[in-house]
Amino acid sequence: MEVKPSFQEIIQSETPVLVDFYADWCGPCQAMTPVITDFSSEMGELVKVIKINVDTNPAVASTFNVRGIPTFIVFKNGEAVSRQSGMMPVAALRSMVEPHLVK
Image 1 (cartoon, rainbow, N blue to C red):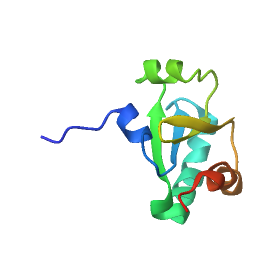
Image 2 (cartoon, helix red, strand yellow; image 1 turned 90 degrees about the horizontal axis):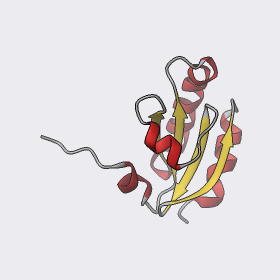
Image 3 (cartoon, rainbow, N blue to C red; image 1 turned 135 degrees about the horizontal axis):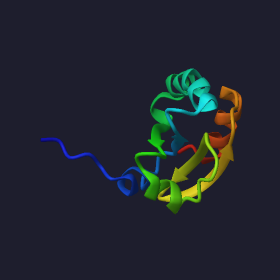
């Protein structure tokens, strides 16, 4: 049986991790799905992208003070290094992550 890594284990990465805090009932969150998909395929191995459903993971959302969705937080080495809420284009996601890429 495969053990899923914990959220803390995932964000401890030197590779930036973009976390998409969302909910299934959230229209703007659903509208961001293709944008996130495009961003993820464009960035490839340079960035990890994970989605956290705030309804099924309220403790994680609370820990990072997520009040509105969608909220995007970039983590590097376990630290939140960039944060933005609301809908945005791929270019805005890229600008959140690029300063934190492993050179």
